[in-house]
Image (cartoon, rainbow, N blue to C red; front, top):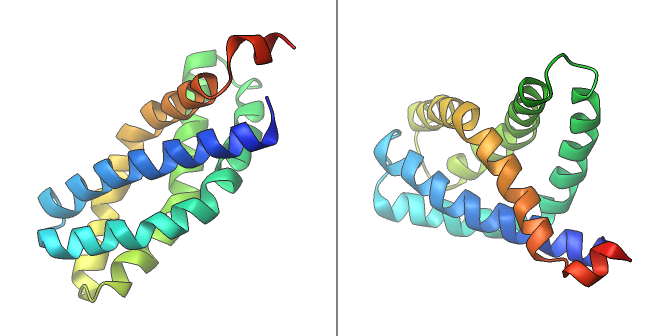
Length: 143
């Protein structure tokens, strides 16, 4: 797969997934107003544009470690969770804080996101891989 197509796929996956899931957690779990959450999600787009490919590479590296774990599904799931939390949570905390959310709201949002990240890490890992497959025509993958 070409680097440009991987970057495009990783970026599309990150922006679309983070916008929808992040807003749901912020509004329904953390109690942010719709306006605060929309501001946070809009602020996250440039960050996601900048970090999507590094995250994809970081996840790929962790996924290579999964092959040393017993059970391919379990190893992949654990590595997706580790990648998602360790890479995304620090960025998320800064974004929420920058919206004017209180310290308590930032902590609550982060706690809510950890739970969400554990649940959503594997689906996102599968989604990013699906996006990579969508962005590469079958004729290119055979080459």
